[in-house]
Amino acid sequence: MPVDQRRALIFGALLASAVALAGCSSSIADLPLVGTPTDAPPRPKEAGSYLPVHDLPPDREEAAMDAAERAKIEAELVAARDRQASAAAAKDSAAK
Image 1 (cartoon, rainbow, N blue to C red):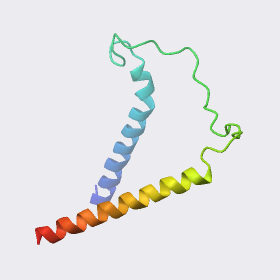
Image 2: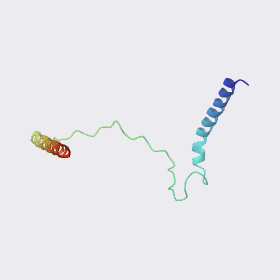
Image 3: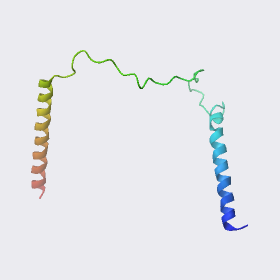
Image 4: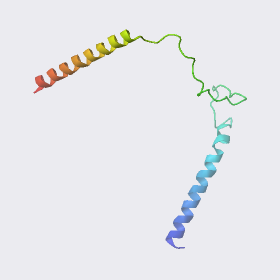
């Protein structure tokens, strides 16, 4: 048997066994001695329905944050960033 033909045969056998094992995995999981532990809760009789991912929540009646609150928080964040940058610069200069 040539080497290429032998490799193709081995690859085919591995692929076939992988497909066979993948197809059996769900039935193996349902076996009482192999699949689930004894203290696991029972599976539901019916499969669950899909989550409503396209259903959007209703619009808010009032804004979550008004412009003044937003500006105040942005100013606080900028001040905190500047404090951290100056502290890091001072630490770097002290380390040198």
